[in-house]
Structures are given as C-alpha cells and as structure tokens.
Image 1: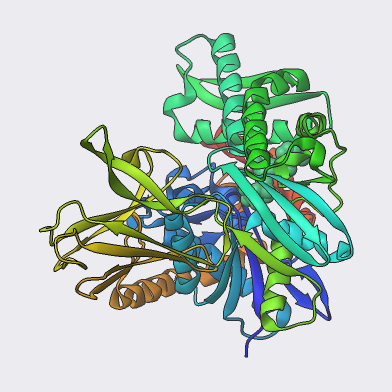
Image 2: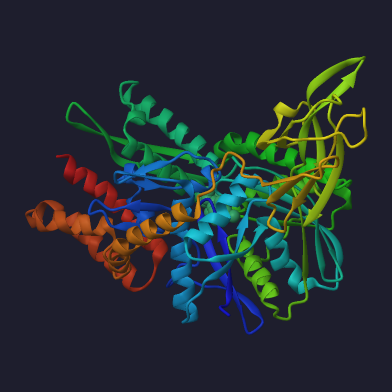
Length: 578
Ligand code: ADP
Ligand code: MG
C-alpha cells in the first residue's frame, strides 16, 4: 500500500508533507518548501508549474494563470496557449507537481493523498478539488478543512490539554476562521466561517491601485498602464513586494523602470509607501475578517472571552496589523509557533498518517460550514407560500452526518414533486445556493385521501460531499442523487480523456521543468538570448544580472534569485523597448 501524503492546495502557495518516523515534515523541492500555485506555458509551448511559471507571469501574463482556486467548482475556463483549461485541470497540474516532489523526496511512487480546502468552500468546490486529485493520479483519501488541519498540526503537541482555540487563517486568496475544541486528544471543530474572496491578493490589488494613482499623478492621466497587461502584472508584483517589505519596515520604496512608454520616452514609477498608508488601505478588509470571527464564535455559542488561544495561519498573518487587530479583538496574544505557511500542509500529512493507521494521538472531528436543505411550500394565513427553505442538516454539524425529514405533498392526487436542494441559511429558498434538483414521479398516497408522504434523507460524507435520497412511503420508490451543484462531473470516459490530455501536457513540460531547475529559468533564457544577439557594450548591466542569478541559483538562494529576476525584467524591458 502506497504511503498517503498530505497536500495543502493553496490559492497562492501549495505544500506537501508526510509523516516519517512518527514526525510530520514538509517535503521540499530543493530549497523551496512552498510552491507557487501558478501554471503557465512558455513561448515554446512547454508547461511550467510553480516558480518558473510565477517568474514568467510578468512577461506572459496571457499564458499564465494564478489563483485558480478561486474558480474551483465553477465552469469558467482559462485559455492558455490556445487551449481552454477547466479549473480542475489547472489544479490537477499543480497536484501532479506536488506528487512529483513527494516521490522525489520519498524515493517511491505515491498515489494516495489527503487534500485540504478552506472550511468555507462550497460543495461544488470540494468535489472539484477531489476530482483534481483524481485527475492528477491520486486516490483522494480525504478532503479536510484547512484550519482543521492547522489545528491538528498544533494539537499534536498538546494532547493533554482541554482548551478552546480559534484558528485565524489569512492566506493569499481566502480567509477562514474556525473555533476548535481540544479535549484529551480529540480535536473538534465547533464552528467555522470565512470568506472565499479575502486575502493577500486583495491587499496587493489595493496597493497596486495606489501605485497606479501615483504613476498617473507623476506623468499625467494619459499615462495609463491599466490597458497594458504586462505593466499591470509588474505593478501587482511590485505591490506584493512592497507589502512584504512593510511587514518588517515602516516604509517601502517601489521603483519600476520603464513601466510605460509615451512618445518614445520611457516612463518610470517611483513612489514611497508607508506602513501606515498600507494599513489604512487594508483595515476595512481586516474588519470584515473580524466580523467572520464573531460569527464563528456566535455559531459555537461562545464569546471571545471563552477562548484560550488564537492561532494565526497563512502568509498574510505576518502583517503586523493583523496580529494587532486579531489580538485586540480576541483579548489574547496570538500564537504562531507553527510556521504559518506550513501548518496546513503538516496537518494534512498528520491526517494522512492517521488514515494509514500510524500511531498518532489525535482524532479529528470536522463540521459542515453551511446548512443544507430543500425548498418547501408553507401554509400561511390559509394560502400557500412557495420558495421557503427547510434546512435538513444544520451548519456546524459534525461530519459524517445523516439526517432525514418527512414531507407531505400538497394535494392527495399529486403524483410528482420537484426536489430542489439548497445550501445556505436564508429563509427564502432561492436566496440560498442551488446545489441540484430532481423530479420525483409516480408518487402514491400513503393513506387514502391524504397527500403522498416523502422522506428526504441527506447524507453528508466525511469529505463534505452530499448524497440525497427521497423515498415515497406509498409507492416505496426511492430516488437518489449525489449533489453536483453547478459543477458538471465528468463521465468516466471524459475523465480518462482528460487524464490522458493532462499527461500529454505534463509530458511535454517535463523537459522544460528539468531545464528550469537546472538553471534555465524562462526569464533567464530570454535574457541569455538577448545577450547573445547584442553587442556586449550596451547590456553589461544584464550580463551582470545573469551572472548574479546563476550564482544565486547555484547556491539555492531563491529569495535573492527572485529579486534579481525582478531586475532582469526591468532590464529586458529597457533593452527590448529601444
Ligand atoms: P494560500 O493559503 O492562499 O495559498 P499563504 O498562506 O501561503 O496562501 O499566504 C500567501 C499570502 O501571504 C500572499 O498573499 C503573500 O503575499 C502573503 N505573504 C507572505 N509573506 C508575507 C509577509 N511577510 N507579509 C505580508 N504578506 C505576506
Ligand atoms: Mg492556505
């Protein structure tokens, strides 16, 4: 039986871990412990996943995709290199890369995995994640919630403790908060809440807007990079770098040379941003996260005063203001003794080991973040009111869970009903998210003269995926469905075709990946080609950068390499511009 690995399939970064000799650990790719969740195609058509893809984002934003996780569970496709990819396929390519990294570390084939999702992910997005795992060649043993995984990583060392813990996870694209109870080695999620569109990406966007405004102030309104995708990608990247710098410094200087050209003249961006200014920009978003925090506490029947600990998870919790605001709000000094970028992956690895039967002193109980129910009609003041919502499984129920309710048709002669399945909390059914519907026909009255009686059973499995069945008591007919939401499941034949297609894409990309790792980053390759085609005098700057990049790469100093590559981009623009 193959070893099961744990994967944090993040919006911005992904990581993989496994328990070896009783200890969970991140499985690195060289010196990289977290891998950018970015996929792209080089101009040659070769597939790029991770850092090489992230590096070419600036030069070829049109052939590169990031933050695909935000589209999981939707049918939106992305066009890369002349081919439309579904979000599951992009995620599958990232998971294939994680599989490769795991196999390289473990020295054996790996085909089973536990994959994490935000606690607030919809059913469709969970199913899409599972499917992405399968497309990547995994048997997906379990889908678990990210904050739960983080708590598992945290709880392992504190199995004797009884306490209430809030896990505040602010990543690149999503925010999640869970209230967790640790009790004699059992970790129980009491409630979770979140926002699938709140994270560091949004901070970058706000800061990029600020940079854009500064650029226009300096050069006049006709200098508008917003129609130039490359310039915008550079602004975004500069904004993120400034944001990260502001986590440790009160001021950051942003300098982007040759951002645009006007009448043949280069226009540069140079602006200083203060931490205060940045904090003002993001404070409303952080307030939103605290409202979620309170909602989770309310759902758990608690107040902030009941909490014993607050754990911070996710790269964005390195921002000092996050620390400050969460600490003040919870009345507790937040803890972050587990690396915020790695806790989720470590927890997934621990869950994998538990499934595998390794002796680990923790048990996991997870909850559903949304209520699940059906549309019903109600009698009110002698008239029928339709579009009402009846929850069958209430939010924050522990998984797996099965709940059944009996419903009556409206008229005795009625032979069919339409079952509409919703997820959400609103009293008006159509204000919730429609997950699926089916027609149930051939109904018979259970007792003469009375309308047929139907039992609807909701079975929410351990992965948070919903199976619904309806039984007519009169005819004893049963109708079943697994909820597919708006997400169309692939037929087995389509699935195989997709697996083959991805393998083809992957196969062609393999060489490019190997080259990128051997030092042929696409950016550097381009820089080298330019050097080769030019007189040496006019690009000594670039030659010097390439030398420094080679050195950084040889020494495995990836952070330094990132910085140098940024400068390479500037240099390329300057040289290619004239
Ligand atoms: P996800 O779980 O969404 O994949 P992570 O938890 O890895 O993301 O967090 C990634 C986010 O954290 C990015 O938006 C990144 O810019 C941000 N980030 C990383 N380090 C810092 C830092 N030192 N200061 C501020 N933000 C940071
Ligand atoms: Mg994360």
